[in-house]
Amino acid sequence: MSTVQEIEAAIKRLPREEFLKLHARLQRRFDDEWDQQMKADAKAGRLDHLAGEAIADYRAGGTKPFPPDEKPRHR
Image (tube, rainbow, N blue to C red; front, side, top):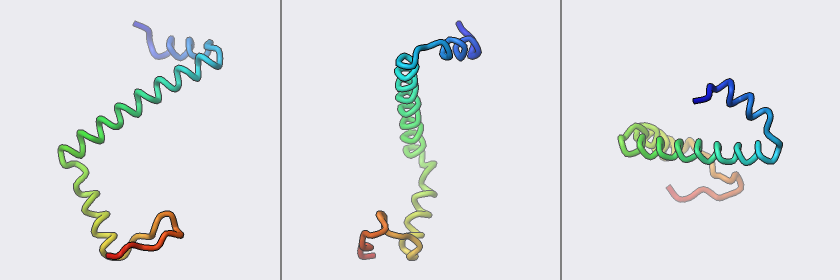
């Protein structure tokens, strides 16, 4: 198996088009892993406190419409 340093050296030698393909593949993998982690955290309840804080802030009037020119919804 190659070391990270060997892989980095090989990446530096890639033509631009191949480098961009590699980047896209790695980005997809990173995004997929991030999505899986977020789903696992949500399922385990590790994000519940954040949702609670956001709802409380909204109910207390501490939020702004987005986009900014959108009218606030009824609370």
